[in-house]
Image (cartoon, rainbow, N blue to C red):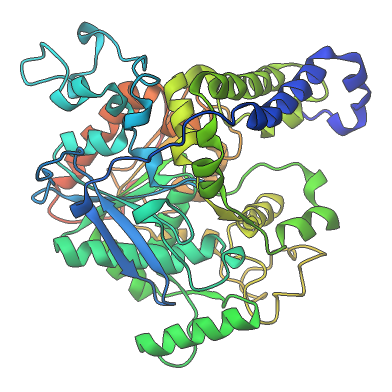
Length: 515
């Protein structure tokens, strides 16, 4: 990472037309909202109604899940005999990030999505004799990039989850606490346990769990036995009443964790899947000011599902993709430069345009972005600036007003009343597979190694890969998913799935493999 003091060189702005162009593209992007007013409204992603489930979290929130099989007007072919795979989403995303398919209104727009010739396609995407694409991919090429469809083709039973206040239409999850109070802890200690318990009750099986970015964090926090503190009584009615009382008073309770609960949860899980799993982001110190702490401590909620469904859906595909590629393409170039400002753009280089098909770029902002509380970003800001993984700094009645302006306190594990995920990662004992992006923006391979790979209890089946030419976001939806991640993931899952139980934790940590 370059160490230049980029903030001291703002004069480069006036000397460089490059950065002026970046500003112009951003302005044009905003103006595009007005120009697109006559376009058609999106009808939504087709779902099999029999694959929609819901469950209730301990605080009374309703969490929706979707069991995947290719959409059909007949009876869906769910993989009821396969091992369940529970996949959680990244922050500002919903479950559609894994369900790429062609909605009826996008039939023409998505017809040009790239897939290789049959001779150059990976084996998993072909029919039994290798002469053509698998029938569903042949009918809709968008499925070539779908993690849900890949897992289904491999015989697994894929399930996807929308966190509270995220999702659209009939799979929109709802929360009982103010949406603006949600943090990463809310999802990890309330939403994820409810979803996993529901899937176990339906299938009766051990499962794989994981996800992209925040989805990975939610899964490994779950495996630590983390839960939200619930007062004196363990009864479901008492928990619900306690949580809702805390919400009315304006705060969330502390996170706690149980070694016995961690052991039980790990016993129910076959393995952890991390697609650039979130942890400690590299952030510039300039964020460590009262201005930014006040912003990320505020009660603001970004209703991105609503914005996408009601505003971005008005954009025609080509202008929308053009604006996306204009903005992120310039960011890619800025981060690759050698100027004093390039260090700053390193932090924003999380979407590599060259690694994304234009149709998947459109799919992302039209169907896949999801709502999030600004406090979730504050949670990451605390972890990044203080180089630690802990619960949200406003948790607990003693903290919810104390740090809103001056920011999160200096870490003092064991003495400051906070739960530290970074100090308890060894409770994660299941086999692991992680795919890291090479740019290092938001989640660097080095931080993943320091806080996850080397701290969890290792097994002989742990695997860790770093993919060249990928950014944090596009890794989970980009061009290398079908050709590199899917085959590597499938081989690992089949090996681990065949084990009679979780292997002993005696091996050295996984070694980084660059692909």
